[in-house]
Length: 420
Image (tube, rainbow, N blue to C red):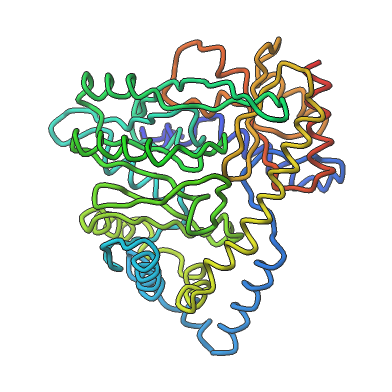
């Protein structure tokens, strides 16, 4: 069958599809020996899960579940949820916004597809616009979101080796602002900046000063700054360092209910100026009529009764902080005295390992581990927009540590054995 350009682009094999297919096959195999350290699935936090079940039971008891299942919301999403979230964000951060500054979509992935293609790609005047990632590596799910090719540009980071009290081999990626400014000054095709905070895959949390610098650059060049806040404050709040959330009419802030523990309900949130929100609503209306209302309906009461943020602070954050500490302790134990570096764990729930003297690539490591039923994600997939032969791209892997300690230990020891 002959496909259109769209069909050809989105049906061809790529890194993320192959990885997700492998993860799906592993999940469905019912093999009890599988060590699943790939993928981005959050853990099941018992206290949080119990509260969501309780909220579902309340929807049933109040006879409102039929409204959730049986009625369309508007194309920008559930009005009650949008109003509740706007009120909370205004109260928590003193932002000048209303429900008209919030749109919903069927997951963050769908929202980024809309945003990237609204702002970049083929333009009416015949030009071609691009999205700039000021810090690589970045979220692998961005890679194939563009309707046109060559839609993303990325800046290689500065790499800072850290001195830690424990003597652990750690490093941190830093934004190379000189390089960012050079690209913005020389390339008029840049139509948006995009950064995740905390960053998937590394757990990096760029500083408040870095966010302010990016915001000033975006305003200087009259382009929006997109901040992917899927793991950040106010929910789920998986940040283990000092960081403040910021928003203004030039920032497009993207949030999610997935990392709260509701990934299957596919609820992505965009906070932006009215023009962007209206545009998202019109695209939603054409593509899906109306976003999923189940996730928003499940958490609206929690927001209105000021229960969601305490839940994040008292249950979600401590849960993942403990997981992070376990991951760091296991890294220090298993990779002690080896030329293996861990990116400083500042947020989210990922370990990013750099095998500085690796003799095989991360893709080769991935294939060898898969033969042992151990699943990680090779790092080169995350360096979107960097097309040269930079060796560092092939020396890193991402691990999801939102699992039990014994599984994580087994996986890390398998990695060490292959890399020895």
